[in-house]
Every structure is written in C-alpha cells, then in structure tokens.
Image 1 (cartoon, one colour):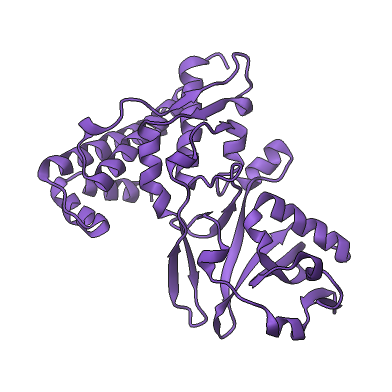
Image 2: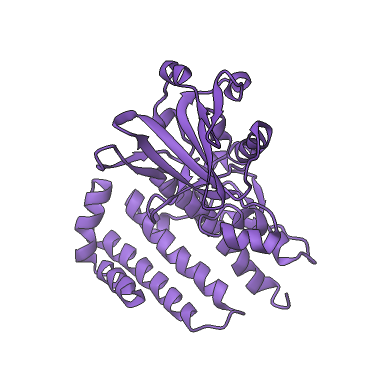
Length: 333
C-alpha cells in the first residue's frame, strides 16, 4: 500500500503529468518553469518522508516536518501559480516553549507572515463535508476554515494541537485521561427527506434520565459550539454507548428538554411528533462549522481555538513544527 502511494507521488514529479492536473484543480495551466518547481518540491517532500521511515525516533520528526514543508510549498505554488522565489523566507511560526517545558506543554505562536500563512490560506478553502442523500447519491459542500488573518497571535501547546487532530482521539484519551477536542460524528439525511439532516454522536457515558442526558449534550456543546444550533432529536442506548441524534432545526434551549417537547418511551428519548412537524429547518451551510476528515473518510468535529477554526491540515503543520523544534533545540528531552 505504501509503495502504491509513493508511486502516485512520483507520477506527479513529472511536470508534464502535473500540468493538466493543476489546470483541472485551479483553472489555469502552470508554465513549464512553475510546473518544474512544483515537481521539485514534491520530490523533495517524498524523499524526506521516505528517509523518515527508516530513521530513529530521535531525528524522525525533523524529517517528517521537512517532508510536509516540501508538499506545502508545492501546494502554495500550484494554488497561486507563483514561483518559489516569491514565497516568504520565514516559517511564520515561533516556538515560545519554556526552557524546562515538558513535551506536551511545548508551545507555538502563530505570527503574521510566512510559509505557514501561505499554506493555511491555500488549504482553508479545502475544508469540506461529505454525505449521501436519501437516494445514496454522494454530496460535498465546502465549509471553509479561517484564513491566516484570523489566526495571528494565537498560542497553542502541543497538547492542545494533538487534542484537535482527527483520528487521535482514542490515543489522546488514554494518554491524558480526558476527552479530545476532535470527535467523529455521522451526518446523513433523514429518510426520504433531503432537506432534513441528522447528526449522530456516540458517547461512552450512558444517560440514566433527562438530567444526565442534558449533561452529556452540554459537554459536547461546550467542545463543539456549532451543536448549540442543532436541536436534540432523540437519544437511546446501543453498543454500550449513548447514541444521540441532532436535527437541523433551530434550537430553543428552554424547550428542548421539556416533557412537552421531548418524551420518554421504551427506554429512549424522542422529540414529540407534534413538535417535529413545526420545526424551522436551516441549511447545512448555515448550521455547520468547519469539520475534519472530508478527504480521508469519516467526519470529525473539531473544537475552535477561541472563535477561530483552524484547518485540520494546518493543525498537523503546527504539530510537526513543534516536534521538529523539539528535535533541533531540545534533543536531551
């Protein structure tokens, strides 16, 4: 599988193979010189990644970061069709960790200009959500994450970054004994109704009554504020979890858990039929924050940093920068 992946990357290291693909994605065909620069960055990135597979842990993060940097530069050049000589000569990031910092507490600050900012502005529009309608047709909508101007001066620890990386939530929970700030969710249309959407979340805590259900939902909404707009539809037990569904209907907090709006029957809570008929629905674009996983399969909610939504790709860039800084400047740790 790994060989097949690198074979595809090598295909893009030919400027002639690259030109039509860049035109298809960005609407303009790069010149031969620009295509060669993109291909060179891709080759350099691949070589760093390949070298990292056989390197000891003590130096591997540095090679992984430079591999990511090579791919990032390729994307920036392809996105803007500007030569490498026009790119900023700084990272746009600074390690502000204390000298005696533990690894989890390593801290980064996002500056105003640099490679990171150009990379983030190239990928922020790529944040997307995939779902299938009631006829199993695939749909994709764009929900852009924030541009770099919104991220300036943000400070994040490595622990705060790892908490937001999709796919790491189980490892994060085992390591830090707390919930991660990225969690998988399931988004789908309701049965035979392509204007009604449901979000499903699975929580390890089993609700026992109306109050315990509210505590679980409040915990999710504190991490993922966009869920405040979605109304609770139903909740039940299954596979050892609480399975909770939200619907794309404007939420009135004082009414959501009232017995007249949410009834208990056969060991599950469900919105009353009369209320379900009168709810005002909103579109997905109105109700979703930038999510993760649109390209890798699955969908993850990612907690914002304050009010800023950072792309999952930018979060990985920030994490690798911090780990490469650890290798460069704190090898004893």
